[in-house]
Length: 405
Image (tube, rainbow, N blue to C red):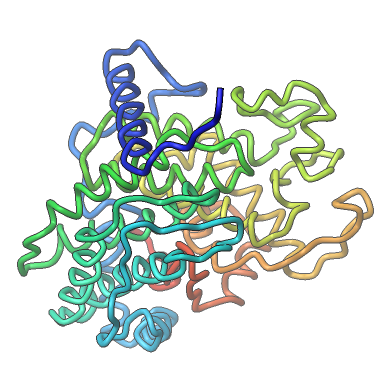
């Protein structure tokens, strides 16, 4: 039989059908993802704003900025001076965003990600300053895309939808639940998240772990905004399974855990998937030997989902998720700070560049729980104020730096 690609309309319909079936099976209890636990259950009532950052966290950060206290003041100034906060920004939406490997081709990929980060940036600026112009700019960006976008295509479509979807969800959450003005087309934006983004990310990926972790971050954030319990539970269960397969702990045994659907059923297959690394030590990630930049994406997504879950009333920091996050941060921070690389680790050579991804996990585990994390602390404080990776991480010294809430 010829492998004839589906049209964009039929592909979207197929994804929506699969999502609807999954949601129905989860709701009736006939389906559960591997690793599903009670800690993943959706809250009885969703907390808003509640995607990655809470109202209490925002109020703390706002108070520090207005009082001129560091590092929050410099973190806000950095954000406000960035192009993402520019009030003259013009949205660049398109009906179909086409993204190949490493965004080649880039038909709307960069524009979509940057508009989504800009919307989140404007939402944060609104909250700190109460200047309506920022809220209206965030709404303008979201409205432009919700009136235009219908699909993501090419090989990077799921990852692109995850990167943009994660930022859109945070922006929409802040505007809908904190802005005192009118967002007339918020329902249309919710429809965009439900019909274009959620079907693209909810069923996960068999690619490198940062893909699925970021996809679940987007799925969790969108589910909170939509108050979609079934999708929230589905994403959380898949997130737990992938996190366990992404960060190795010695308690896992001789080999790392795997995602059942990937059929990594031999040592050779596992070693190949772990970038050729055959010695497994606590804190090593599936992409450590690829490069620290992609590893940082995975670590960041783990911290973001854990933070959202905490805000929603299910604290994962005291579970294996928190332990894997702590160990991954510590392991990568040690080498990012310049420690000598042993010959058994990635052939004695690492590609550094972790990115601005340590604030959320460090704050949760060290500041709230009191866990000593000396290397992560040194790296976090050295990199302040943390900016943006221009993909889906943004301004986390401002929102999470030493934040007790």
